[in-house]
Length: 242
Image 1 (cartoon, rainbow, N blue to C red):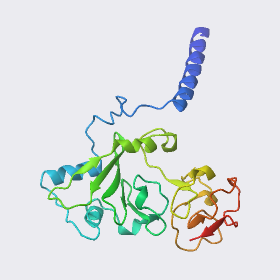
Image 2 (image 1 turned 90 degrees about the vertical axis):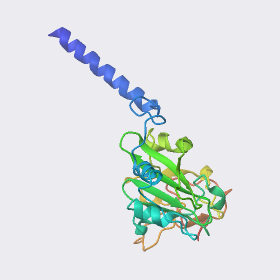
Image 3 (image 1 turned 45 degrees about the vertical axis):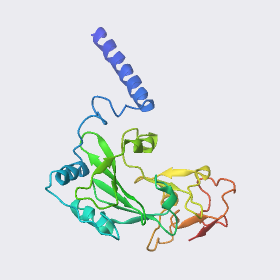
Image 4 (image 1 turned 120 degrees about the vertical axis):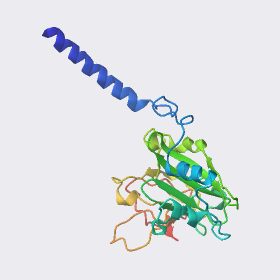
């Protein structure tokens, strides 16, 4: 009996050590359980891409918005889901700003980002085995447009900020007048538990907030000001509303 108790205790210690180590070390996206770069994807965008290449589905091209509206319809994403982000927190930084925000449309499985005047659409889709897979689609007419997989997006989307797996990422940042993210002033990863005053930095927010303070619709007046602490008054003289 004593031997069994000892072994059980050893097992518990080993398990605790393993969990601690797991918390500190990333699992490679190419781990056999994921095979991110080698296993065929089965997310909604990959499935749509196969249907297009096989001639089962056709996307109409709109000179004004490119493939945006046909994609929203094909992937079941409501137009009403639109969010507008004016911070330069995408690889298309040169075109993003307060006067030309990046529109993000989404449902439970896919997100599409559209930027007026940009050459590409950005897509992120949840695969049942690999996590979130990222794509771009060129905004130019083609009989069979091709979604290009962008594993380089993992430089941000496979980090501690995304829980250490290929995943979605929502950030709240202090933003300069041209849309530049001022990370030196701090930034926040947003989830359901985030305090209201840390949410929506770099995002446009409509509607009344009921007196609650948040970081939406705010631009930094003086980027050289000392970094404010978490509990700083976000409506102080350092910031102005756009």
